[in-house]
Image (cartoon, rainbow, N blue to C red):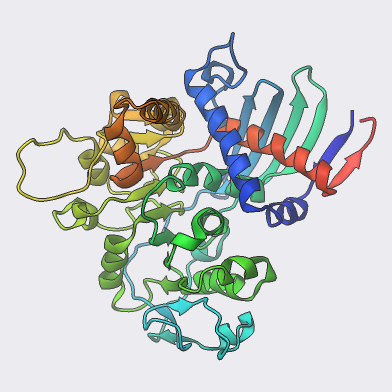
Length: 443
């Protein structure tokens, strides 16, 4: 059997070649695997939770941790080994810088990606018109400049134990995490404005997949990061790389902005962007909440339905969302209230109930119980059944559908080895079809 070897550069090239239909297909396959994980048995599928051993973490003395993540599907077995930084985030005191565009189509608080017959449309000219407000930025901290992307590999074997794939883990991990996080996002009614916390590989892939899936519906992308320079590098990539050209030019209403805590108005703009967002993607290894709970839990904050995804923290001491946000999401609904607010489901959506109860800082610190969590695989199954019932003319789970599409939905993920195996299988297949990577015959 041939062995396919995919380096990070091979995976990068393959992933950036994906079309909208490719991404939808990969997402559907991942959703089906997560559904089988939540509902299957050893007799029916290799994806079931019983066949997914707990991962092992080995701490190192240099503030890094190596994770060993074995997993299986019905057709493959595999192991991802990844080492990543676990340094704590610094204090969020500081100030803000905001990246703005002065092109003729830009708003005063963002950089615009629109092209116009009367305005040079090259990425270079667009970037040259970006101006920075604020002054005297602070020096970036060590953790600001240190990559938190995992370094390692994924080994894939057939069900009979024959190796057929060896993949670098960095780009793959960021992609599969964003692919899962955008599953519910892609079903949302309103995605006009999104906020992304972080400026690393995870943030990049959440932005890219959001634009691939719903680019024509998105008007504003706010990148919020404590270190302005890293956010500026991400923005430069989006504006100058040919790999982003199709996405940035597909919607003439699309604009971007950067918010950093390196200037005095950070708190005001943070509140403004969180409140206005239809979707919030948290992609940082933070040990403190990224924004005050009241931005979402107050009467004003609850008026708007949002999809909030938190994937950056994966240990008990790490936290991106304030526990009060999760507590409110699962609190019983009062029948008699005097303020309009968006629907809530009474649960927090997770990738794995067992893993999140054991490892997720937000879940642990909020004191949630297993009864207050629902796995995304189980939820997708219920949603699928409810939509079929509605299509047949029945009532179905109308409340569930309304909540998933327009209510306040929180998704918490600590990552599953199953995600790597499922996506890795598909990438090996695509790479062989499209000529990416290296093939070792007769391995």
